[in-house]
Length: 261
Image 1: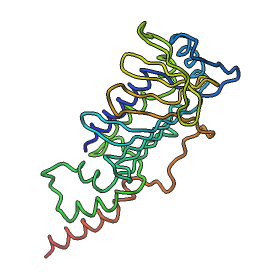
Image 2: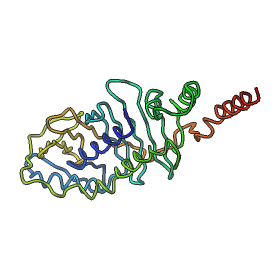
Image 3: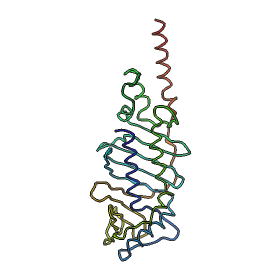
Image 4: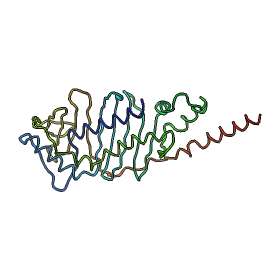
């Protein structure tokens, strides 16, 4: 799996949400019911979205380059935390956190190995040492160098902010949108709104979006609203220089010894 695949999955997540809506609690809580029109329900959800401070979107995504689980949290300060797990695995392939103006990443050894260009001049031993030093731990994303292409994913997650979502919710609602009967999703009473390519389940109690599903696929995102609105810096995060320092020093020493021999 390549970085591009994960970026594609993040874009897919954005499309699912933007096809519907998302929200959180507000001072004047709107309510919805299945006697309202689709436009009324989604506009109520849009109003609720305007008061949202943080939202978590978690579920299954299948695209042309990715098939697995995604867990994305974004807040109104344009901070985010995203975890992508390929297939049915339980260990995330890559995790990213954007907070305090910096981006941090944590890659599995398999994913990191896939990011090292084929035909690289580094030896197999050094490559193995680099993977061991940099995988399965939190590192600060550099602004330049071989791993800076992960910044393309950062640009995608930057677009997944509550300000962007707020602008999209409640507009361009298709005339064909229909309202289903009240039902229960994730333990909450909801009214389903069917759009051309997705279904949005909106809570009757406060117009929060509870679930968004894409028609004809297994793509489903469940939305929750954490009580804490901050995205913390990952514990123990280091710079790449700190992680690779011992390896680079050892490689330099070995090179000097070889030249002297």
